[in-house]
Image (cartoon, rainbow, N blue to C red; front, side, top):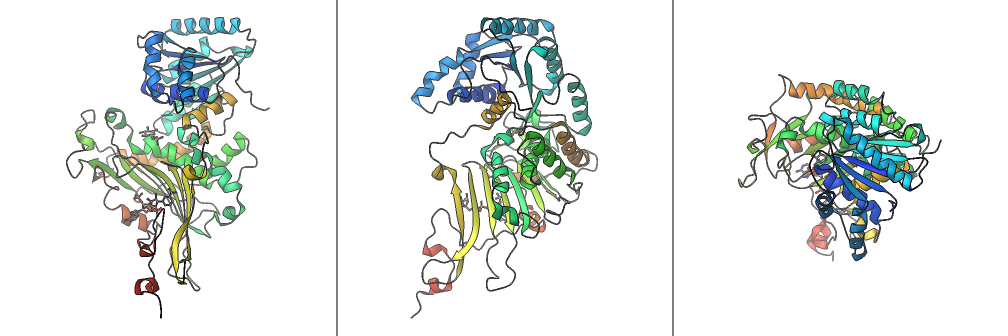
Length: 510
Ligand SMILES: NC(=O)C1=CN([C@@H]2O[C@H](COP(=O)(O)OP(=O)(O)OC[C@H]3O[C@@H](n4cnc5c(N)ncnc54)[C@H](OP(=O)(O)O)[C@@H]3O)[C@@H](O)[C@H]2O)C=CC1
Ligand SMILES: O=C1O[C@H](COP(=O)(O)O)[C@@H](O)[C@H](O)[C@H]1O
């Protein structure tokens, strides 16, 4: 059965509407969809939370985060806000939900809606998560008269046991078909691009295996520390924060087999197969760190955050090698690495190809395909060519697909916009399925138990603003990545001074 699209007179309720996520991501995403014409003006949007606020105060709170790239979009802000209202109520009492449903039903009756379409978005901390899911089902679900969808945000538990417990509470209430577990990395443009890139290009498909690829790295670097979120982060650490979810999701799309169709379940089946093929993580071969004060003393160390437990061993950096035990990937080292308070902010995938060992070109750079997820979406393939001109020597260059120069005037939705649109369209392909979640926790739980247990290592300190802990380069090398430091690669423009060539260095031959 093809998914039903929520189009006219859709109800959207955001629980936790007074919070940071709702303010910075959920409502701006809804506005983005409205601005671009992907959300009908017939929609009704409710914010629901405990904080006391009038409708006006609520609108004033969310408005500054809307993106308005054009004059015309400025005019749309008030039109969108007029569709939004706020309800202040408790999460654990029925009254608020009953009032909300009355209002929803009045709206639907006024519009003559016979089959209600209701989307509920839980932008909430885990503590109230199941309470709200339960109450929404009991008081706000339209039953067999219509359709309801429930969007849930991470954390989906903190290990295998708690993830299973959460699932056991949700499953009797909300069917897998109604649930949308959001991982916003799946909504990023370059992550969405992985399936077409891999399966619509036969030349790439041919070399996408251990015969040609020698290493894969997926890195997420952030240039800021916990900055006020220390209390939350200290209980989480970098693995739960971004590796077990965001980076692992990217990895599955990058390495899974071709799905039998573009259908959501076909895609998710392949992701689960791939996850099951990952070898248990090697606790002895990981690099973990925690940032300390910057070298100039201006940026605080992790432990300087007052909301963090004194002496906390929480890790803010991790590099985790893993291996996929299937025919395609066996023997290829794959590294997931992420860290806070680093020298730059970027998310990229780096696929390095084998060196050319024999033949006329033996001492040339390895080919490397780089997919930059952010900032500034790009994809570039580092390759070797003849130095332009009289020389017959080889230099490294790239086939460069930089989105900002190749694609002008394209609307690239924010990750949340893209995913909320998927929910409205009933497309599950970019959402995490229950079994996928379970396998991913099964993979990381033993490692987390070790790191957080009595035998857990002390994280290596790295100064705020560093590339990572000091042993990083050696660690990457040991795990298969060859860093080419020969220095004749310059982007975006290469000049004769930057290519290494004896002939050019010594001047033209007589
Ligand atoms: N379309 C575009 O926008 C393009 C931009 N460029 C730009 O050109 C520049 C060069 O790009 P590129 O060649 O991809 O290289 P990068 O400088 O981005 O780095 C190459 C890789 O090597 C790692 N690395 C850096 N230093 C060391 C070290 N000492 N030992 C081991 N590993 C190390 C980096 O890791 P780590 O991240 O941890 O430092 C990164 O994974 C970049 O600024 C890039 O943005 C290039 C092509 C296209
Ligand atoms: O889920 C999270 O992701 C963000 C990184 O997301 P991005 O879209 O800004 O790359 C991270 O900063 C945060 O700690 C984490 O909870």
